[in-house]
Image 1: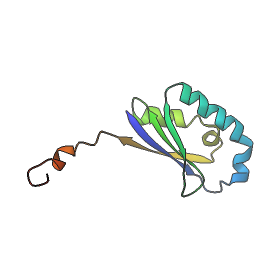
Image 2 (image 1 turned 90 degrees about the vertical axis):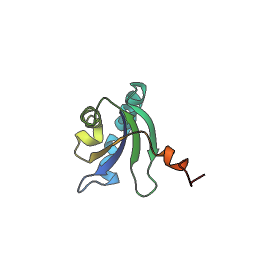
Image 3 (image 1 turned 30 degrees about the horizontal axis):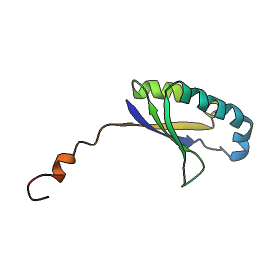
Length: 99
């Protein structure tokens, strides 16, 4: 299952509080990428943070994996996990009257 995972800063989280965890956060991200959980990762442009495209058997499995990030373990971030599926409305583009 493909998932969009958005980090959610927790109340009181600041860049200063993140700083001691960042090296381990990056190492953990790399391990998850090598472990075929993270497929893509992007910096958010609306605020500090990341958007991850992940692959997991379920939302629950993804949430368990994301909970292992050092910032999550420190209580500084949570995660919003959105399951994604294929876009199936292509046929509507080719329906009579739309061509």
